Picture 1 (cartoon, helix red, strand yellow):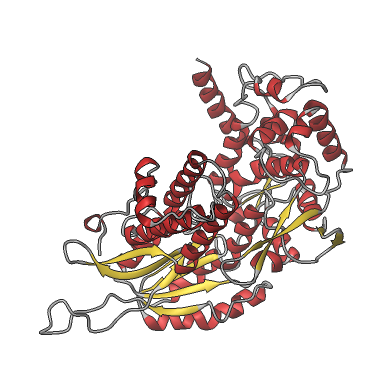
Picture 2 (tube, rainbow, N blue to C red):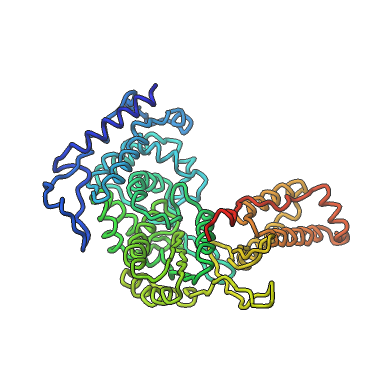
Length: 525
């Protein structure tokens, strides 16, 4: 009953939104882009759309809940989700953004209330590493109600100060390079999540379908499936691998602010984002204040990165590049990893020639060694030599997989994927280090942990056509496990016969395909 009344109330509210106009609304009509013409635009009065009061209204059964200062985590979990206060607000914002792509939102910060922060807290991971203050989620929950109320008061008064992020260096592949990860405080994570809950419904209406990274309902395997479909559709084509050098570290704050203000001009939210970008980085006890970049590891950083590349790459590709090409082309992007697939080689070379200029205009640098053209066209059969290929196509890498041409069971040319050699080596090295550190644990505990690690490996790399890499991974796991079990005792030796008998009692999970690709007959090639 409540759901039906909410639907009717939402429909009436959205109709009222279209008729409401004032100068203090949360959205205003955006100026048309250069070159755009609209005959009706001159006839429209200069109005703004006000959904500020509408967004704070309560529907049937939408009363507020008071949270005392001594509430514990388990008490807040008992508070039911009020769809009229959080989810419905997000739905209204998304509907308005979708219905009016030219609108610019000017008043959104007032939607963040105590219930909004509670929902943001619920959606924040509790097992993450602590920030510079050392406060964990458990410690923050000891006085959760008072902490959230204090956070809300500081945000509304403008006295909130973003603490520096704690920088941690993690290995990058098999090289000596490391990837800097910025870890915000737990309170900062909650506030960033609250901001993300406001901005995500807006930008999700603007993002193109070619973007798959860090978006709700999208994953790496969807990006891989799209790449597979496009390469099969274009019979391989010419693939342009795009690699941006240290994208998160070189993201320009000025351009980012300009991009965000094309859709959101709420001063409170823009200042919050600016505080996070300029909060500083603590590395080995020293605090630095870089003038570029966004902390990789922050809750809001993926959305900011997607918005940045949406205007720099996605919009440019669809609006400027595609109309000037001779043949078909597709773009697949996951965060800062992207490939462009072209039907005509000359189109690919023209785009490669201007891609560096396009990125440098917005402070980004193309990695000259990793950005390359790959002749991925489907190999042809030589006349008179059935089953032999006239040329061997190149391969390209994307999201941990190497894409290559091979034959299906029926003998047809298909695009297959296998685990990148560097990723396979990295995974095996991690298993080897674990077996060494836990070689004296009980066999039953080692077996349970290794089974979990193998299932986690298959959860990502278990795709159709990658069976050989999965088998190789298991063999290398067996070898690493036997190697370190053999070093538990100086005198006792564990040869392969004894180890195989041990595997009969403690079998490791078999090869499992978790992600099946679209069948070739279902794709128009």
